[in-house]
Image 1 (cartoon, rainbow over the protein chains, first blue to last red):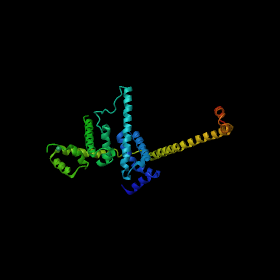
Image 2 (cartoon, protein in one colour):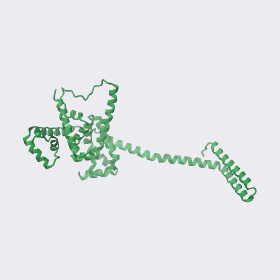
Image 3 (cartoon, rainbow over the protein chains, first blue to last red):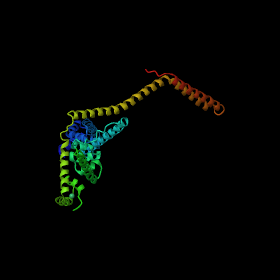
Image 4 (cartoon, helix red, strand yellow):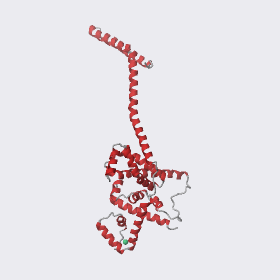
Amino acid sequence: MDEELHLTIQHAKLGDKEAYEQLVTQFKAPVYRFALGMLNDRMDAEDVAQEAFVKAYFALSNLESEYAFSSWLFRIVSNLCKNRLSKRAREREFQEEADETIIDRDTPDPFVKVSMEQSLARLSVDHREVILLHDVQGYRYEEIASMLHIPMGTVKSRLFAARMALRDELRKGDHG
Amino acid sequence: MTSHPEDLLSAYVDDEISEEERQVIEAHLVSCESCQSFVDELYSFKLQMQTILTLEQPSVQFETRVMQAIRQQSTDFRTTWLTLPLIAMMLLSAVGITMALMYGKFIHGFIRLFVAIVYAITHMVSEIPFVSISVIVVSLFVLVASIYSLRRVLQLTPVERG
Ligand SMILES: [Zn+2]
């Protein structure tokens, strides 16, 4: 971490709003992309990413080390994404009860070659999360382990399982 | 080597394995075509993943909205924590003023009560031992009557503010 960023985080921690705004500028794109990968919806991603930054601002005093800022921030946005996804699942459940004939939009069309994005969207939340953190955000196994409070061996096996699932999804689309 | 170390290959492309494991894997890859192609596939996944979201950008008003929400919540927070004691203080002052007004209005009630107590005590002292019991009874009666009248006045008179 460069010294300037470290200083900015320190200032933000002391309540400097301008310093915090700089942090938002610096981290908004990765946080937004992560949320987009998790939620597969631009409006929701924008919403959740903003919420994460607001939440982080008021929780900044809980941040133990300035060096852990980005992984701490991703933990916040990841939890918010999971909340949003379970809320969505509840809503869908409710909707399906109301209308039994609703078409599951997630069913892959065998004649269309699925893209990487679509395949990613069909993975489980845990698989998506670990792929986004590792491949898209570039975190190391160790960082992901501390972020998600899971052992490093779990990160390793989960990432492997996620990639296998991804391969299956991509192959499903190749039949057409 | 017969078993394919597929789970290790995922960590291998991430460069998250020990030197020992690397040697084992690389020795296997030389002789195993299926694992070699699996590794190629994993590299390709990783590469594609790194690029899929790079073109996506949050809105231009992102920071503005975040800072607006923060300022909004800060003032909400401040108003709550300033308003609560303020309301409490105002309530207390209102009660205080009312009490003061009542005391002013019913001061004669307290004087009557005080007089009754003084009367009872002086009689108790002077008439001991013969009439003391009757004096005590009478004094107690006066005391109770005073308290009762004071209470009635307090209950019946509406609060008037100066
Ligand atoms: Zn093999």
